[in-house]
Image 1 (tube, rainbow, N blue to C red):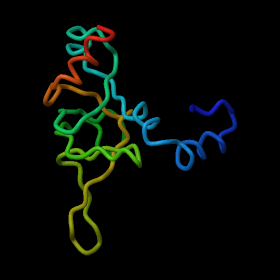
Image 2 (image 1 turned 180 degrees about the horizontal axis):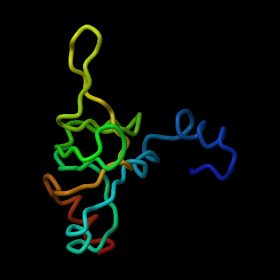
Image 3 (image 1 turned 180 degrees about the vertical axis):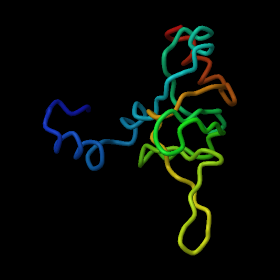
Length: 121
């Protein structure tokens, strides 16, 4: 259930504490590139592992890479090549919110995704 309140604290509470896992799917949508929009007749699509994305906002804006992991609980994705160095010298992937990326090419298109693409397009 999506929160009906406009109060920021209740919106945040829903986002981090009370939202169910199946409700968080809508938070993982990212915009499609112009050529994919034309091809599929959709504006956005759920990000999946294997998709190629371009980061549009933040410190890593302009970086392109493959999606390595999708974290449903935190509503974040890990992109290939987007890392930071910790104090001890180890490289760590930086989580990116899907609203800040644009899907440039789709990874594996299985039967479930084909059905989703045909729904609106």
